[in-house]
Image (tube, rainbow, N blue to C red):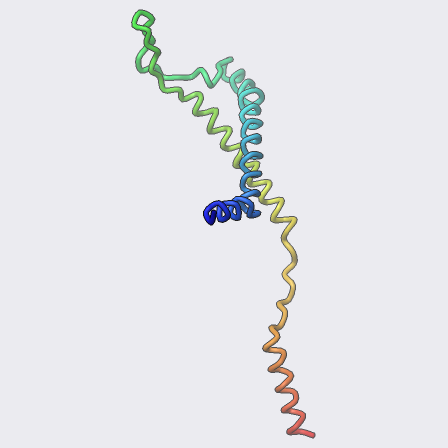
Length: 134
């Protein structure tokens, strides 16, 4: 029973729940970025370079063989270009979100409060000065 209780304590801790929410939102955000790149950004770029879809770009190492029923072997660098663009969009979006959060949470540096020990020592010093100079 100890291991189950320990796991329950771990799983219900705030950080784990926050992480789970972040993963779910991140997965949904990834789908949005994929759609943005594939359906909005890449078509105009493809049109500018002659109507070519980046995802179709590949370097065929071995063509498909219909008789032997073997698929082609190819390096699909166009898909890689799409993924790089998706990564850049996600990186920029996360940078902007972190920058906005930092701006919202940044407070003017307040003067540091004097530690209680120092206050007590200052009071003792002042009392000693008063006793010497009545």
